[in-house]
Picture 1 (cartoon, rainbow, N blue to C red):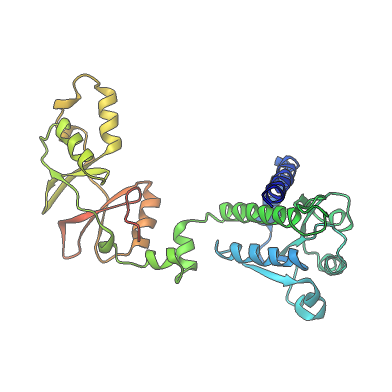
Picture 2: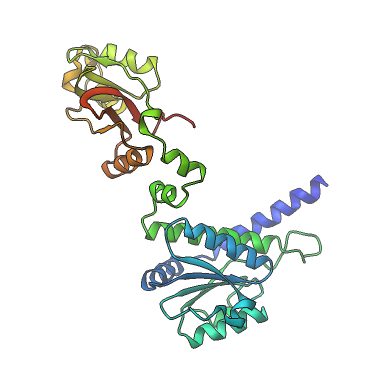
Length: 315
C-alpha cells in the first residue's frame, strides 16, 4: 500500500512538472490580454470531475471580486447559455479535449463571439484547436496502475485553475481587505470586523534621550517590534526594529549612546479605537507600514497600544 501511494504521488508530481514546462511567457501575456479586454463574466465549464474543478475555480475567483460563474456544459444547451454575450470570457476544462458536451458548448460560444481559453492535455485535440488560447492542464498518464482514474489530469486542472485565479487576482489588485469584504462570515472576514482595540499590544514608552542600548533591551524584552517615544498622553515618535538595525549599521562602534530622538520616526501613523482590524489593515497596506499606533478617539494624544501585522494576535 505504501508503494502504491508513493507512486501515485510521484506520477502526479511528474504530470505537474510536465505541465509547468509547457507553460510559456507568451501564453501568460495572451491570458492577461484576454482577461483585460473582457468586461463581462468569467465562465468556467466542465463535465464530470472536470466540472467539479470548474466549480471550485469559479468560486475562488469570486473571492477576488471578479464576476465569475460555473456553467454546466449540459445545462448550457438547455437554456443556461441564454445570458452570455461577447463581453464574457469562457474557460473550458476537458482533459481529452474530445468531450461531446464541451464541444457542443464551444460551438455555441463561437456563435456568440465569446473568447475561449481551454485547459486540456495537449494542443492537438478538437477543443484546443478551436480556442483563443489552450493551456496544457491535464495529463495522458493518470496516477493509478490502470491509467483510467481521473487523478493526475484533475490535479493538473486544479493547479492551473488556481494559477489562473492568482493571475486574475493580481490583475484586479486583490488584497486581504477585498477577501475580508467578500468573506464576512469566514474566519478572516470575522476577524477583520473586530474592533481594533481588541487586538492591541502594550508597548514600552521611552523618553527622547533614552540611549539606543536601552532601546535594544526594550525591544528584546517583548514581541512588539517597536517602542514609542513620549508619554502616555503625548506621542512624540516611534522606533521599530528596522530603525534600530539601520542605526547600528551606520554607527557599528558608537551606536549604544545615540539618543532615541535622533533615529525615531517623528510622526507615526495613528488610528483611533473606533475603527476595525479591516480599517487598520487597509491603511497599513496603503502606507506600506507594518506597525500602527492606536489612540483613544476621545483624546487622540492618549496612546492605547500598537497594532502590528508582524506580531498581531492569533484569534
